[in-house]
Length: 424
RNA sequence: GGGUCGGUAGUAUAGUCAGGUUAGUAUACGGGCCUGUCGAGCCCGUGACCCGGGUUCAAAUCCCGGCCGACCCGCCA
Image 1 (tube, rainbow, N blue to C red):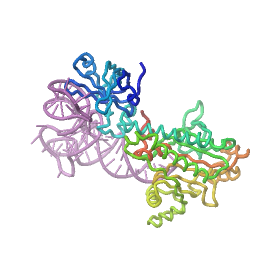
Image 2: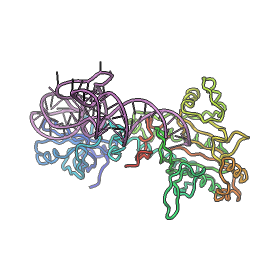
Image 3: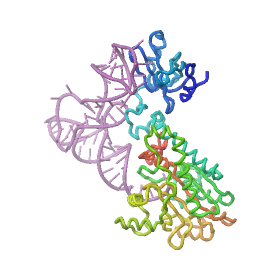
């Protein structure tokens, strides 16, 4: 007999069906027993009367909550709701008690408790909803890049010989008789590929060995990377702006149920995202009574002040050269063709025009105190007709933090890695 | 890396400042009543002070150390 999803039961009224799920609740009212069977975000009530079903009653009475069951029975309407009158209830996985958290979500669990029992936590509806939204957002991003834009999806190595910007912040790994590192970004690879691909994107994990203790940093995170050729940072910003709008416009439609269960509406599509320069932001800070030395990075407080003035989403462009990596194209002496996409004080993305002139690129390396000869493996490809190019990296987990309105980035990551947590 | 606050039944919490009777509540779990519940209801029951040391007649409560957690700053995605 074919298994019927709960969502399709309205098509089976008066018919016999097989359904699968977990017993969320069991209520006995005199000689009638009600089971709530959950499948993801869907539930259906199973109603069993004792009279005439004594054997089945006795069996079902012994099944613990949260056990997985396969039920065969007839679908009928009771009032304006559907229910199933069971013929058989088969336990396929009995649940022990007590559980390490309450899967019905009535008694809240602390984040740490949730993470310790992550696999069980996905039965909590709002947590299920978060990861369903995450899946849908990932699909929208891929759909936008691949189908709307025609970019090439790439996969670059996560085990690499050396760092993007020197050797700091990397996790070393044993690689046969050598030391290799976990990739902190696909930066150099995606740029090299501008030698032939018009536009590339990658959605992949990266690793940074920084002992950050915040609610927006992880040691393993998913980055959405883009690189486009014959382009500058304004082109990359346009793609990013389109992407953000595309995802936010569509997720409201495709994840209605999840959003309702979460009880948080994602931010409205921002349309045209305001752009201010680094200098503009210092001006805003100055007017608000914050003094910032030119060249300093903007801290969280400063970004909150700017966001209050400008709005939730905003770009800050033309950052000082001293705060950006060697591969960024310089703009005059002190500035760069760079941008950050902010949502309030959270940095969602950063990107810019890349330096494609090989001589200037080597100068940049020296400027940053790096040895150009060590980067020969990379710069040599810039000798074969490297076009101007630009791109960005977007933090998928941070984007989801914003979309779902959760407080801690660990809530939107199934198995987060931070300096303390390596398990599960 | 630096800082602040915290750790009480399976889970989530009250009590800690001002040490003192049986450590309270919700939920879960076990038992009982109930033939349409739907966060079912009512009654009964089981179940906890992170670890080690100290102060004291007396420590969940005060002090020290350890372990663990949440948050803030820095770093960035």
